[in-house]
Image (cartoon, rainbow over all chains, first blue to last red; front, side):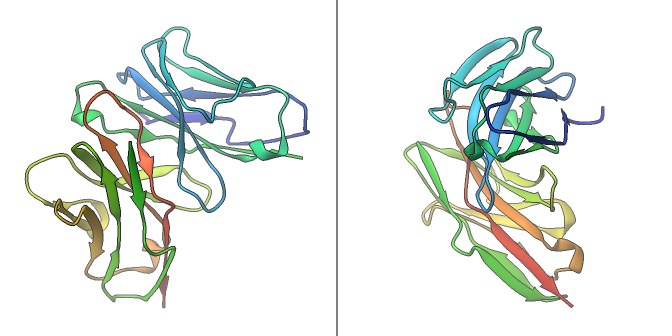
Length: 115
Length: 114
């Protein structure tokens, strides 16, 4: 078990383009979370899945953002029509429901820069 | 809903000196508390957590934290820091019940000076 992995680690895009990030959780973890971290701030919750079901979404998750976890394993986060304000680190975390009081383990993040 | 306040945005300290990073939280329900560390351009690594039981919890790299319910605090301490402890430290809280997400403080940059 190598922990939570995210791909790509860095992404530079032009305003208006679409981007997609991938997260692979720890293999036995059924809960998966997305957070966004801007410079100098702590991570802010975006959304979370239990298995393939998206159970909660933050008000931060505008209509341009969509997340999926089609088979209850890996997840993708897509941002459509990117804006400069989307520049941030996007962090993925996973946990096991009922286990270890659902401690969340984080991946290395995807750093997005929108020009 | 929960909120977290990390009272110091930057803490410089000399190598081998003790350090305390302060964290206060607000919540209408009982909470779980966490400290994470973030090295430059990396994700968050769990340092320690308070779930229940003993209010003094020990974590990795010689860090410990004490849960104080009356003062709603969860301060992080280390008796002797090393250069390699230089990083950003985040306190986080999760309420009992249905809410699953973590609420983070704004972080404390610990800089250990030679």
